[in-house]
Length: 353
Ligand code: CIZ
Ligand code: SF4
Image (cartoon, rainbow, N blue to C red; front, side):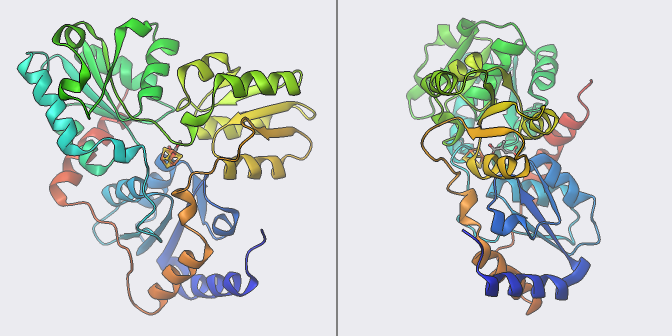
């Protein structure tokens, strides 16, 4: 639907009043009505770095989800304030790994005498608490673009990895990119004592995968891949590594959000692409490339519901509050957590390759 012209005018006016004091970040999965006001668009990691590269912007309005705003707060200066236009914009995947649960898992590994050889690796899509835990325990953060490099590094430090919180990214990277087998991986369920695993299973595993997943990417099935191949002969299936293992295995291409965008941009006119990623992004790519046939991999619509909580009314409210001299919905990470999370993020930036 086109955005309400009154709200568009209010957002534009408030943004103009704030000038360079405000910098608006728009994640690729945001609605069009929000993206039109973004100073820069990107995936979570690119956006956090863009915020850090603008130390003059007092207010960073992060149109994305909570863990992304936390990462921006960690990477920006103390004077900069990071704002999330709706505090209810969380991430169901990040919420699947809570610090107390991860500490309990680590205690289990410690009791078994295998914590010392285990390197914790967390996906960017996790809370600052989890990144802090990983930094305290000599691990590393990864994104979907550098997961293989992060795991290569981790397996030089130890013989096992505890991968948080996305089982699919962990499994897909280990099996499809590093030559590990499915039998090298075990699934740790935080809701079961000992993760629902025996001591023998934990001792034998190379990859201990946390039982977390993305509610958006995790919905694509092997059937959706087979269906689209039948409906659209010659279609290229391109999916995000947060998809299930059998979906990624059946796809033609797999990669991060930035990779998906670049691949579609470079594709020849007339080619057909079924994309296994968030629907706002797929729709925008289809509109931007009318010479290519770009479609959503599934028949059902599938937005990220928490990303979609950031809408134009919330953005207008946020900008108008800032104009009025108030700072709404500021996201702050405490200094100790931020320090350790930063260690794990810096370790990622230092990965060779
Ligand atoms: O699934 C997501 O939320 C992704 C890919 C986020 C990001 O930008 O890394
Ligand atoms: Fe979280 Fe998935 Fe939404 Fe990304 S798309 S914010 S991983 S629930």
